[in-house]
Amino acid sequence: MALSDLDQALFTEVSTKQLAGLIMAAQFLDIRALVETVCAELARRVSGKDEAGICAEMDHPAPITDAEYKRALREHPWLRDGAEITPKIAELVEAVDAEDAAAQKLQDERTGVCVEG
Image (cartoon, helix red, strand yellow):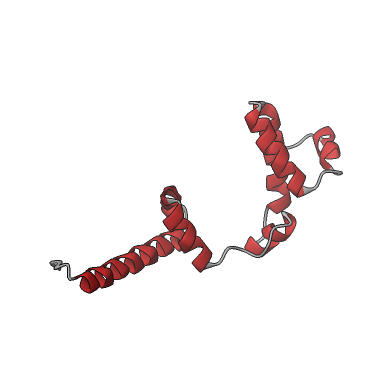
């Protein structure tokens, strides 16, 4: 969706972080046209930037580390749905599963549980 000159003029004074807040407000208020317009502007601003560039644009701290993502995967299992999105997320899901299985095996050995396999 291309922004009109008027739409772009309205957003020149709005920070990228404010745009993100505006998107959430428009979604909450169910103002579909505003959501689409603001999302288009946000997409324009981050287009072509790498992860670090997007974080800088959004005034966000450094990109999430693998360890932070693994912790989030354990705390919020629904994040596993993202495994279909990128190979990196799929790799982290596999690593978490392997680490959890190893930890469970060690726990079972310590408690004397006999596990086949």
